[in-house]
Length: 191
Image (cartoon, helix red, strand yellow):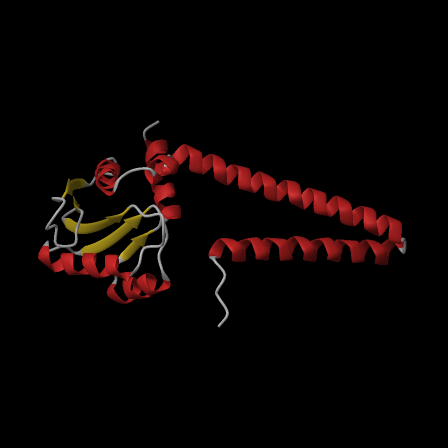
């Protein structure tokens, strides 16, 4: 049975395919217009170099955003530290955030209140993908806390089964990328 590629690997393969396709296409166009193989090869090399610089610049910008977000520090936190961090992050966004007790929390690590709505949050500071158990836990917490919604927030990503279950149960999943964006928005609004 063939293994599925990770999103990161798939994105890298797509980028390489795009670079290759654009490079070959530009080389063929140059060959057609000039009827000169040497010029065509030179154009091919120049196009590859320019595309490589563009890709490098984009990757550097992404790394800079990640560094500004502080996600590396989050990756080093304990689960409890992450819960308290999220409590502060949500407070800065206007939520009344309460971190629940560490044990016997009935599936919610945080309870958020804003504009008459109550949201329960399951926080997962993981180094691996979060599975569907987190979705089950927060879904169960919705009725216990009389909440209108349930969220799972992680510094990582989600398994496909977690995504499917969340979709069918109307649970919001906040993954690494969305968490970084949330942090950066809060930091920008505080300037």
